[in-house]
Image: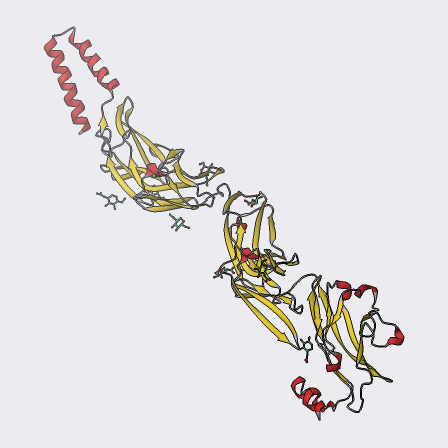
Length: 552
Ligand SMILES: *[C@@H]1O[C@H](CO)[C@@H](O)[C@H](O)[C@H]1NC(C)=O
Ligand SMILES: *[C@@H]1O[C@H](CO)[C@@H](O)[C@H](O)[C@H]1NC(C)=O
Ligand SMILES: *[C@@H]1O[C@H](CO)[C@@H](O)[C@H](O)[C@H]1NC(C)=O
Ligand SMILES: *[C@@H]1O[C@H](CO)[C@@H](O)[C@H](O)[C@H]1NC(C)=O
Ligand SMILES: *[C@@H]1O[C@H](CO)[C@@H](O)[C@H](O)[C@H]1NC(C)=O
Ligand SMILES: *[C@@H]1O[C@H](CO)[C@@H](O)[C@H](O)[C@H]1NC(C)=O
Ligand SMILES: *[C@@H]1O[C@H](CO)[C@@H](O)[C@H](O)[C@H]1NC(C)=O
Ligand SMILES: *[C@@H]1O[C@H](CO)[C@@H](O)[C@H](O)[C@H]1NC(C)=O
């Protein structure tokens, strides 16, 4: 009956053990080096057995069976113990009370291992309990780290120290926490299976900057020199927090450049260079370099470097501008236009930086100078004088290029002032000069005779030639025979000129050839000398009248 009474407060699990060979001791127990440990222990033996000369017991290390000669940790009959336990062990429990609680002092890591108890009730009633307490002697406290520490998520770090040495209770302090943001500490005492552990939990929210930071836990026993420390380095995972790329820059066409990108993240990201939506290069690294050789205009644009490490992604872009001399401009084709037409000449080119565009007509500035890729030269109501070569010149700091077109202006015939009829010795000579494009055809028309004189009309001395856009025609009318009635030289001469743009007819002025006047004057003078001055004046006057009537 007493046996059951004792069992109930102990452990209900073994209450059906019915006072057989049974032991209770913690499966695992730990302590710090150089401190002590108390292994709580209670045992049972079959109720039929009566101890003869009190109860004895032995604690073994490693093995419970004496025939295997395990090191003796404690022996109640004698004080013969294994060398490494000399002076260190003491039985705290009273074996007669079935209390086998053992103290081991000044433990070292070599004392880590399994401890077995063997009871000696007397006579043949000796029993090695197969259950054991496994002692761990720690030279460092344990720190519980979560499998993954993520930036900006609250983190709990717990440091543990066993508290199984009744002489003194350890204290726990966290070290290097000065620069942590709002660290909080909370300590706890936990008892399980008669072993105790104290802990201190540090709570804070790590930031990327805390990656790699050292933290420490110090366990010490007050009023002793026993101090234990454990250091950890934080591995704080964080999404890319900066993506560094080159500043936007300008490069010369044909040159080579290297674009660098550096991502700050933990772990290293998948880092890639994008051009538009095309991925040019990638790697799993914190750094990537994109070489661009023989850069062309197609390489100009936005380059984006993306870092993605599974915790987040980030990108940064740069603009690469490609510089090049102006391309040969594209201008309108050469053209022929009719006078009075208005037109716009286009000059298109490309260059970087944007070129200045200048229109030149036959080498002289025409219109204004513009900057850009298109220049339009507007010509309102073009005149024949605006015929010429128009050149568009594109220039930037890297070079120049040009292209030209010819404009030909067509227009109707225009009489030039050299046109006239003059009296010459043999009669009257008429010259008609006309400009026009296409070159005009010239005819003479004699209204008195109602005849038209042109190249096919060989009866008259007709001569014509053209020189560019100027046509010249000439006829000579003899003094006599031209008129049907032979009344004198036909001096009523019209110049008629035409091309596809028009026809014009002008009466040519008869100009007195000075040669003729001199002749008349000389004759008058000759006649005047033998006679009187009056007579000569009269003669001259008559001559003039004669000439006048002849013309009319
Ligand atoms: C065994 O002895 C120890 C030391 O004297 C004591 O602290 C403990 O309470 C005892 N255990 C039981 C079950 O009486
Ligand atoms: C440590 O020693 C001091 C005085 O020597 C004493 O006041 C204090 O209580 C002791 N602390 C502990 C935990 O034993
Ligand atoms: C980008 O930056 C790196 C490092 O500063 C430099 O070596 C490289 O020439 C730069 N590239 C360009 C295109 O500026
Ligand atoms: C870069 O990041 C911005 C903002 O997160 C996002 O809108 C954009 O799509 C990203 N660009 C690329 C090329 O991934
Ligand atoms: C010159 O070319 C431009 C573009 O091709 C066109 O719009 C314009 O009408 C042309 N000008 C003339 C006078 O043909
Ligand atoms: C314009 O005319 C000149 C000479 O009249 C000639 O040399 C040149 O080739 C012409 N240009 C074009 C574009 O027709
Ligand atoms: C001129 O001659 C043409 C025929 O050659 C004739 O038809 C026309 O009537 C004449 N004009 C005059 C004014 O005589
Ligand atoms: C010359 O004039 C005649 C009659 O007036 C005409 O039939 C002929 O076509 C003209 N020739 C030329 C080359 O104009």
